[in-house]
Length: 178
Image 1 (cartoon, rainbow, N blue to C red):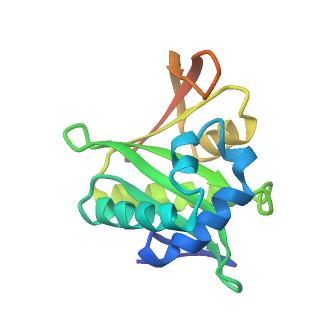
Image 2: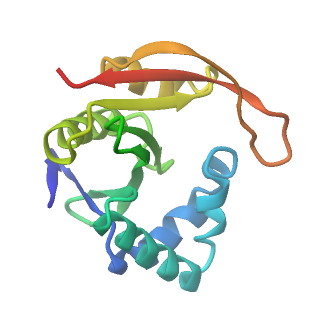
Image 3: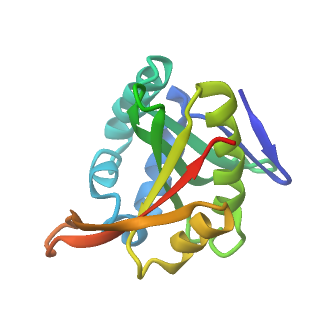
């Protein structure tokens, strides 16, 4: 499965992505350490990334969690990672989490990716509700939700605790299958 976006493409994580995943994580450590501390920790060396990619590939196949990569077509450089996670098959609900490389930020790539993967989740996975949970000060991520017609639902009190910080209130946005 591959989804084309102009000069980029989205595809499920593969075992072969381990090296590029490690490179992406290390190069973007400052961008990832606050909101993706566990993913970062699991990808700081090539060996760790190999195990991570293998685990995420199995989880994808077992429909436990879906991790996608966003890559540049010409170079196949990893530009971003996008999860559909915290799946509740009873409620037909999943949550997006995503990060873009600092070299590709500001190009609306995550907005386009979330749009394409929302369609995929509704049409192929059978999900009916998609969520984005974001801190209000993360303006680019708020814009991703708003630009994809996610509706603000409520503030989740003390929802997320970044490393070495106090718990943060997070904003819940949802998108529903039409």
